[in-house]
Length: 343
Image: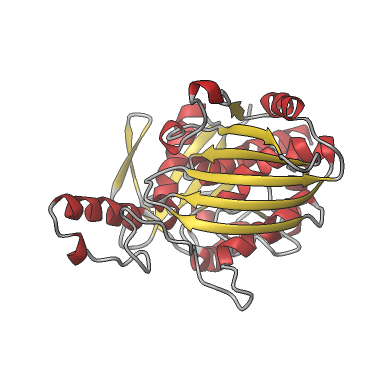
């Protein structure tokens, strides 16, 4: 197999660090690894495969200079907007983890377990977009059920970890908990969130829009339709919870045909990168603490609605830094390589 020159943009961030761990674990076909970040982080080193790699400053010419073939961007939408075109011009395929390109009609938005065929559209712009973290794990669960029963509506409530807002948000939760045990939580600052996150829930992720849904909630609506190529009705309520890693989702699904919970459980069990933990009598179900550093999506509490034969309810948990970001991006790269080598 050919080996590739790979750049990770945003290598010093939470998702960038996770991308490096995933690449290391799966033995990605690397010829050369180039780590890029802002001028502030340039010069720092990162350990990879027992070697120290120096982070370089992201510039307009670096992709040409380093002959980059695959560029994984995870440094914020404004960075992707400015620098992704330079990577494409240098001949690289860009896999972007920000929201900047997701709804561009010429940019494929991909969950490899759901719509891998869309990767082939990358030549239109040179860019493939990585969906929102909450969308990725949800669609991994929805795809096999949609194929079997014809999904027509999703009602979702998400319980999203602080890591979804970055390193400083995780640190804020830890600091506030320390302040709680020091009896000074009332004095603790909250900068990452509008309210205290320790011992609290915040029913807001991102800003509110005119329709009173948040931007995060509407992302799930629009991205789901684009990825499934289907006008599915979807309503979401996204909640920030005092968890460091691992997003959880309660999904209520309405189909165009009657469903069977046992059959649905087996369909999900056979689906790629899904693990079923569904043994209520033994109090066994997925939880965020059990999904950290895992590359799979965990599903449990699978049950039919009490009143409607065409409704199913389930609980979905995944590590948002992995499944919801780094792992999905790396899997896109792997699928892209497969497709390129078949040409």
